[in-house]
Length: 172
Image (tube, rainbow, N blue to C red; front, side, top):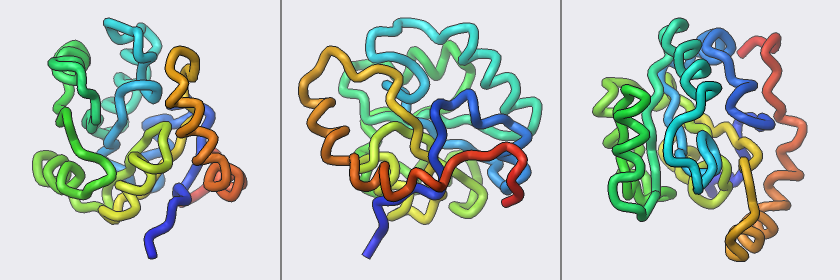
């Protein structure tokens, strides 16, 4: 049985530094877009997101957007603005999108991590694909009643994994 528990939890992507990811052997970071990197309503990357990406890049960590967004061209727009590769309509938690992203990056699953805000897509998909999953808190829940239900259903996994916090000083 595949676990719904992430490898680690973090409050937000800002806790994931390029140095701490590289120290743990992560050279490719697959990332969900909506509610992980940006709010659903954001149209452009923030300065903080751009700075975070610069830190990853400076430490040799490649960012790859792996999005389930149903909005035409949304992932493409953010990927182009950030200068990174992407796959939209990735079909998470199915593993095909993960395999495609890994092949595109020339990486092995053990060299990657997936960061996302949802247990049943991002964490489950990463675990099924053999990629380390990092669960972050959603940027914003407001606006869609379905999100509240989804996050409520994920609460047991979030609570069970709360001790798996991201610690920048922790080794591997």
